[in-house]
Image (cartoon, rainbow, N blue to C red):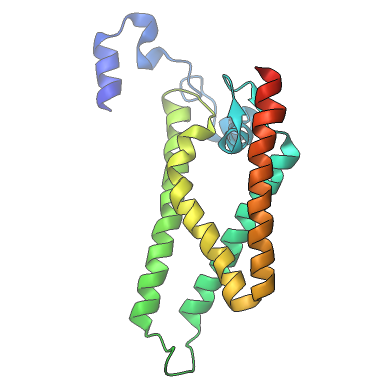
Length: 192
């Protein structure tokens, strides 16, 4: 708000924030910005890998596999959190009281909310101040998102199947290395 107020007070007419051609000022709906102006698609692609002035992207298939990894980890974490909260462990050594389960669940809910709030701020800024569908504005959520996804994979390895957990860990690591090498040598090197 302070930046907006200073811009309105001191900027020359064409650079005043109220004169920017934002989706809000143009009368577009939020839905129009997200889907028709492709805010979601561009932000997701550039969150994974975009180079230059948002000119060069990693192919869609490689971005999709990144999304599948994240979705799988989040789903596994959700299943773990629900099962921990709802079901009491029967063995006395591993018995967890309701307070401990609630604190653990609260931590993961906060991690999830940190991701949601970051995305919401980026959407708000693009809609009201300056339309920029750029995944880099969502990078602050990378740490809580990584914690959620990694914890989901850890749950699969520890509680579901150790071999599956190890296989998934090796597969994800190999894919991430492949994605980095592909981005450097097949996207960046060719374009520059």
